[in-house]
Length: 112
Length: 114
Image (cartoon, rainbow over all chains, first blue to last red; front, side):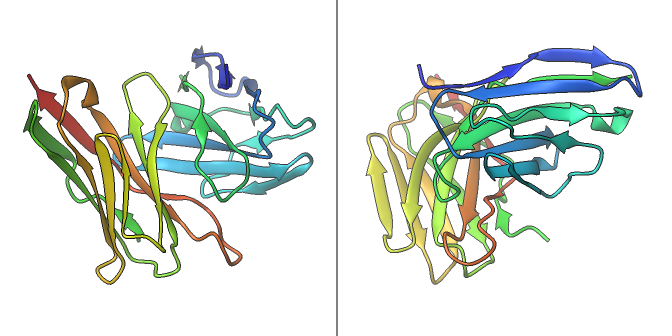
């Protein structure tokens, strides 16, 4: 089944403790992206990647890092999480940057 | 400054009737528009899209209309079903030029009442 898989689905962590949210897609998509969704703010792009080893900042990249060492994986790294990073995170992929995205099921992160 | 606006945060319709969700955009460079549906605790799922060379695209119960002169698009769902109750996001992008980022509206929550 074609899908984008995010892990974990739920995570509660403490301020400053490094964490990684994994994202993997099995559709051989070139384009991958991370979003966060917050009430009243909609979906905001954090980082995106056009292909392996090609990443760029989205609208709200502060406090996040990404890597794209392989085509299928696009992990989101929070080196020192803070409470304002409490949010619902979505990973998405598409064949190119000109089409529609397939989204993962989301990761609800709480930073206390 | 929001480039894609969904001015109705919520909409309630009766089962079997038509649901019309609206979306306005400001950037005349946008040439591709998408609608996504999102259930709670799930990621958005792609519903239907339209290119700026068309003014209508239909897929089953879902039809998207594009009015380029008004910079307005709408999603029609006929007939509406309780399973259509979800948040609907409008998104737009330019497929040419340097900035091809997908720009999202804030969503409209649709409730279809039995």
